[in-house]
Image (cartoon, rainbow, N blue to C red):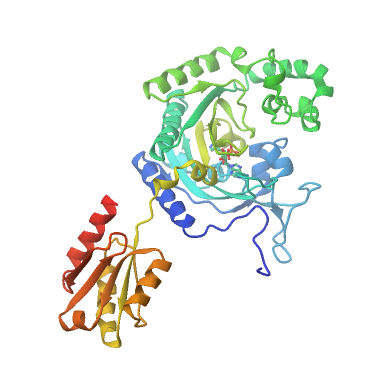
Length: 434
Ligand code: HAM
């Protein structure tokens, strides 16, 4: 047992999983580039206030889950269960607020006309109770669009999310809602307070506190499950102002044109306070209770509230741990390993040549330079799970050849040492037909 272990809720990503991770990230980057999103990388640490104001003082993330620290006296990282008072810095719990900060700080929206389409991939930190699919360090891929107020852009964004599901062969359910705007939400909020106050005794401790501070969050409480207990909860979709109602209709119409399958779920309210109008989540069968793999929506007021010029914005993020947990196991097949061996000292130089030549080609290969007997080479290759072996024995060296053996089929063949392209072509052909 190692003397040190990873911090609770924070995971090492090890081979062969790391290969799935890097290929998934590559695919996401390519997808983003195709849709004209450009990458933005923001620091892992931001000012705590950015999140308090952006995500909302009463959101669970800000109230309970922030990693805050001081950067005087040795960068002390600490979680203060009693609150965050006095702390100025925080590890980012999500990507949007930092992107908004950078967007304003570098005058992106002022210097160029929108829409600005940005993407990010990176770690986030929330002090949550770890369980399958819920970690204290987790990773998100996110898309953010600044400068476009239309519900059609929300639909395009949701379409991009659905393309990710399709690409990775993930069956997800896209659930959309409108959570209104500052014109219609206050009245709805009052309706919820009125509805839930007489039921306070039946609610969990958190929800009792939320009745006044954040009544919207009451309706998606996982502990109380109100949607299963009461069937007359006031729904936001019945209380939208004419503008929000018409935007919601446009959203649904555009989604239909994009052929995005979706359901309307009036219980989606999202856990962060910055959303207005369109809100959506994607759920999938992750085999655990954490079945929300992605979430997002419109946040038209966040840029102005963070100190920038009023800029409409919309975006979403997908959790990479949760995405990977639903990507089919065989989606990224590992290319079989090829290995090279020398049977005697005089074969080592030729083996080095082969290594050099194969290193220029997309085949998975490694060499073992300590000479060994044929049988021993086979054993080693088997142990390492290699399928193809290349052998330099005395005959091969004398004839400027290399012996190839396919351990899966038993096929054996001799190549001239200069026939590197033929070797590569054979390996790639077997890879395709495997
Ligand atoms: P969120 O719903 O809080 O939204 O997180 C998005 C996704 O991140 C979740 O659906 C989930 O897959 C993943 N996630 C969140 N917390 C954890 C955790 N503790 N462990 C593992 N995965 C987790 C946001 O963060 C918004 N910033 C999304 C957004 C972008 N809205 C607009 N633009």
